[in-house]
Length: 370
Image (tube, rainbow, N blue to C red; front, side):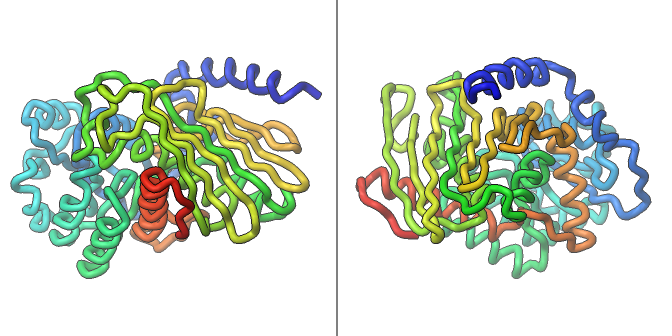
């Protein structure tokens, strides 16, 4: 059998080739878009027309159960462009001052909030008060208190609050979870999640404490936090964490460059994770049990997910994550479907509690119980 290094090197080349392939080709193997559907369409307005909002909009063109019908933006030129590109009527276009008026628009069922983290709290609550279902990008809020406020507001308004956990619908990820539940790995002993990239423009909102709520942990680190939970199937009991900062000019006070963090679980399993804005060649998950293992690389990126277990290579279909996510969320909202791993506001609050604990551990140098 080839060594782990040989496997990862081979996997890296394959992943790069697939990453460079057209998005439309990723989902062909699943035959996803050929499914017929005659149920209700989830009619969505996207709030925040930046790079990820654009990615979601493009992916939604292939959805069978969800449709982009509206936009909310503070940039009139973007609204005009999206109107033309996606055939969005004028009556479904709003700005950040008047989007409360969506309450009077029966042609919009839900709003997908894809704005900087620091804006999510107020925007989600406003959408809920307007009586529309809400989908919010992750992390859902800046801290657990804000997150709970959002959950409570949506419950009070009797609307759904879902979060953009696209990996919860990814086929290879779901296969590893299935194998873990089936006992294929035996007792889970250890999880490792490595998430990071080298960030560019120092003036972007992700490096602004007020808008981002932190640094790498609030952006890329959320994948390792959430992955620790769904890969082990447990909730952490304690957290330890250490912060490293090599560029205090780029990464100002309160904006983390690199954090290593560890979780301890009720079964005795542990996890060791890294979140960074200053390293590449990461995006790796490794799960180890008494009887087997799973490793994934790339593990959470937009491009094709790849990996293997002790039983061999993972061969589940490649999908466009956002396309599948939006169709699945339509079923959650309209049919009450329960996903294998939750994507609701309560799930997001659990991650936010761990983010709070990680930041506390980095400040104090102490183990934090959660």
